[in-house]
Image 1 (cartoon, rainbow, N blue to C red):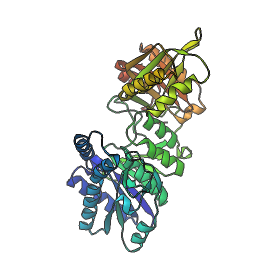
Image 2 (cartoon, rainbow, N blue to C red; image 1 turned 45 degrees about the vertical axis):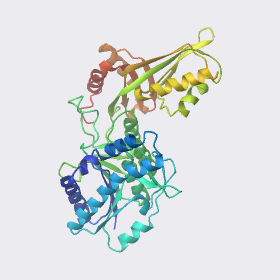
Image 3 (cartoon, helix red, strand yellow; image 1 turned 135 degrees about the vertical axis):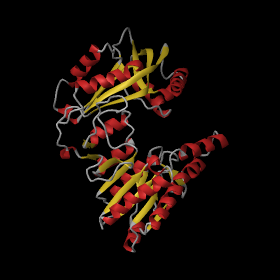
Length: 412
């Protein structure tokens, strides 16, 4: 039997009625001849509730016990889904991460998948099981402890199973009906894409699009797992959703595929840093050690032996970044006059594989923003992406203007 992986997010299994709706979709795929691996998230809001209980009980908690508690939400969903399928006369059973076993590293709360042996599930499929309902987001460490993969980890679980079992496809069911050219809540002209390349989806996910978790897209690209993003609230259709696939399968020749944004950005500047070899490593080493996710980096021209260094990071990491840099200054590792943090900025990005061969995208983007009176604070580019930091109050205007300028509402 061919294998299909189906993943249902928290909103898709938020209550028993939605679990029944999801189970019917699984039943349709079984009727088509698939053996199905279903990956489930915790019911909507349950993980946040469990995390809250942990923090209330022990603010400086043991990460191993944190994982034991927060992984329980997926276990409940998996059991309820298996029971629902059994009531539909579909041979199904639930599997927790340790039963598969999904083997991970020992980094509790942010574990990475190392191996998924297929023997246990394949033996049960051979005995007549048609659906394996697997609790997402969780695995087992070399020490035999439950681990979790970080928020959004069920997406990563699903892709990893699709790769391990050589599945025909991995369907991600969520509360949106696909990947759009930008956020439909900001632009009425946003268009759902039929297909998008792995690289484009990876950039959009890392830049703030919350449709898929970044690690899941990385994994899909590495193992060439076809991903389909679709809504669990619409009628089933073979043409539904957005297919995330290799760029060779993309027929559209749009230069820009989407406009992404992140409102929770901060711009930090170190003023009058000593301009010498190794200074960048002295700055960004302590930031990395403190777990700061640095993105855009700009160094000014040297002036009398000093320079200014600017970088962006998430707003909720500003305090930690300031502490790491001040600690490094006190230790004599680096010297600077002051740290200036601007937390009223947003990051706007245009993404498209067509940018590799088409010049003028940056010029057009900057011209559009200039025409709207929007000042650019920082610029960063890659082969298929251009990102800028701007004042947050202009974020929606910038997204709408760029979406219109690149005519993303039109198909190729």
